[in-house]
Image (tube, rainbow, N blue to C red; front, side, top):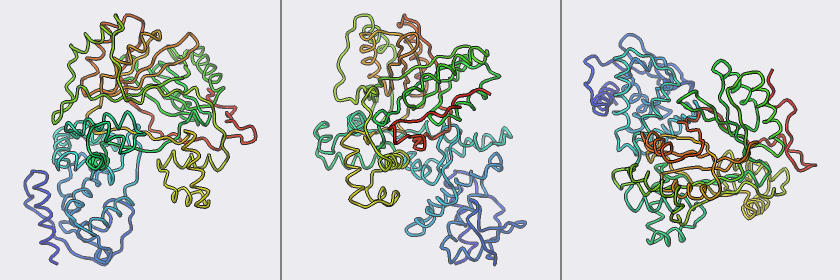
Length: 532
């Protein structure tokens, strides 16, 4: 194999993919006797002047062609990414596209070793998993389109940080959603709102043969448009959801967030990006945690760290996906003027139609189940891995196959392990959050109106000064402004409205080390939420 001819071919292929000119000066490639390890994305090469020396060990490792393709792509890397080692994942994705069969499989498995999963401001950066999926979603336009952004940043002479690089990719990917056809839309709406349905029941709902429905579901899962996974229904094990809303004074914001992040029960943090930037935090904590939240809020107010601070217990949450405004092969087309009039009629006259076949309210005020230490370890494994594979559970916990089968069957039958489903890559990138007071009649009508929109999580909250409603609405880009206009125009009672983004960057873990098996309840550390 003539290395230089292969390398030149990869250079020309890169130019075609990125739609740019081939460089006039292409380096020579030579094999050299030095070793390599998987310590970074650019392993196995050494550059001197205009020569690329490649480790001879790559030949035996089966990685030579992949490395040559990677290095060819590297010639085109924008200057703005020079300080971002992780941007080498773009070159790895190009190399993957050039390989076939066993060479591609080996390349991808190696990629997983050198590019681990990273959380950046609650964005999951996992290139070897996400890039190939998005290559499919974008119709093969991923590398070409994203490089236009990076080349423009070169014009601005802007040097990206790793966090900015991830944010650019996240924003870019959210603007390239998978476009559904009419049948896919119908399957998604039923499945997302009824994740417990069998394939036979799903096929009956949509009126098609089960084999066709199964093929569509499998394709949507392979593209990561649809995700169905097992999880733990936390109220069944004695953990409740608490919501803490506060508006920090600017100079104390980071300090308060640092205190919250030390709490083992912190689930997620959502920050508004308009106005005075209030923060909404969610905790999954045991009974009694409200006392600590109340003391913490009082302390913040007394010290003058916040403009306001309120805490609530969430005792009901309602989730619904709606596709009424989705136009097949086009995307979301919400006629806000028409929806505004419908919304007005719902609130003023209480007229609304029932949405059938939805997940509906998920009550959190449920009886706590009994479980032992093995059960809790199984639940911790299911929560983190999102799998209920008997063999995986048996190997992870070192228990017998029969024991694993019986315990998983029991935990499922008691509703502790449940299935959930969600959809990504369908063009919902804007988050609107609002908090309002409303009675039960208005609440039911309000839910029916929100069910028309693409996705909402609406909760009833119990607070010190009465009940309120908290709703998080996901909309296509630009939809938040219209939704805010409608809400302000027709909703007469006091409410707070924000545009939000998740900023926690944390992964909640079951606090299994805080469970008291003798008393069968969770322990709360004495120094929790303490200001120093």
